[in-house]
Length: 102
Image (tube, rainbow, N blue to C red):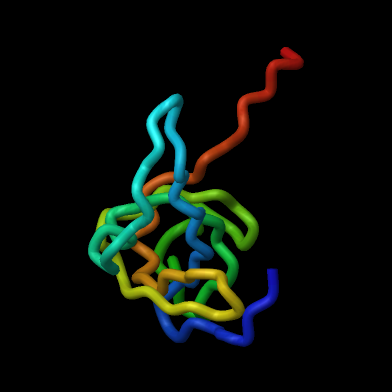
């Protein structure tokens, strides 16, 4: 995933997941407003500003799947991919895939 954007200061850039159109057997209507899209809270961290998490250990690195605060930051779009620019503290959790090999 390539973007020409580089967040400044304590900001991070997250590529938004596409909102599923079907959940189980229920077909979801497409998001109609930016507010509805802003309610979605998962994505992939694609860029980090130079001062992000400067005062603490960074909980996430570029490429990590993250959960972030609802309505955090603002939306931007490039080449059909939606990104959210937000403050580093809006990242609330790193999502890991379960490893069933244990």
